[in-house]
Image (cartoon, one colour):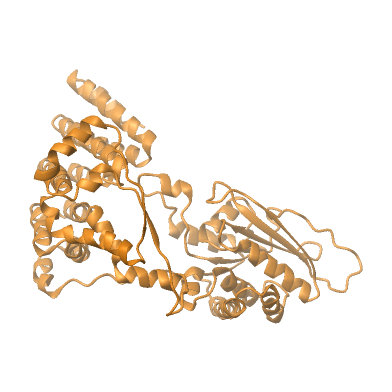
Length: 503
């Protein structure tokens, strides 16, 4: 507190209810007899900029002097931070606003991924463990829990739950009754928001002892009993992956398909470091997302139940779901028998080498016609093994496995890096075609380099993977690196090729 004024900062992304949350705080302070001032600084949504709400409360209700309120928070002089999402705590701590000598942090631990986290080809999500450590170190007191999960469970709103947590934290002198009156004064979803507020108060009182951020847990699909014996024979590290992979493969196709997965994995089982990597990437690749898989996901009863729950729709309330689909030509005929569409597919590749035409569709899957339009695609599932897409994907899978097998005969570390190249198989449409082309080039170059120097080949595979996962610019650099390494090796300059990998 500075000069009898408490400062509250609410950083938010558009749609999180930060504006309503700040208005509740201002209204509650006024109703409780405090002089208060609130302001907002609009930004661009999705964290290319941040919308912040700032409130100051004069704690002396009987004072005669008019307080001088600030329009902006001051780094190191913040009393309360209310963050509707976990990364905002990191952003405000980085900006110097959060002080371990002063600031109470009330935050939700769920994540809404930033643009920079989403656009990277590889996993660029900021480590949750680092956020937790930073929140504990930066705050004088931490009240952190998954407010989104709580709100969904109790059919309320995140900002109402956080308001309750703020009231329960005791960081402000405003009474809980004043906060409830502020919610009632706005007259919007009063019963729901008051219920969320009360839940937040209870959570804050319970979380005050340790302030441990909550975690969401998802129960894995159990392994069918018929597969227990086959999986039990595998080494522990590989067994853990396969236990998750088999139910995924069975849901995707059928038992013969899952057995094919085990047969492909079997040559690598005795290599303790390589087998878990192959098992993980092979399972993901063999369950590639085609139009049939999309149709399965879009028409599951559990999906509509989840949507109804998130929309907080009553049992007799109607909901409308519109799916925006934009398949390209390859995705459309990719689910059809290869013998039928192969001539057209080859012609399309020559006609549109850098991108296929797309067919945009808006399908109302909550109508009978819209649901049937998508659901009938799932009937093509028995034809998937002979489809054009299956032929293309499995040919590349076999090529990748052959590269891993050749590498493991030379060096296990090299085999691990070659196996990890499967990380490059991502995305849909043009993105996937582009990345598959990069994978082919990387495999060829690494296998060629391994014939001269296994350590260099291992470093090359790791470097190529890192570059490609950085994004499109990294793909260009990876292609250039492959060309440069091949030129040096063709000139019998192994040392020069090795020097290209020094970062």
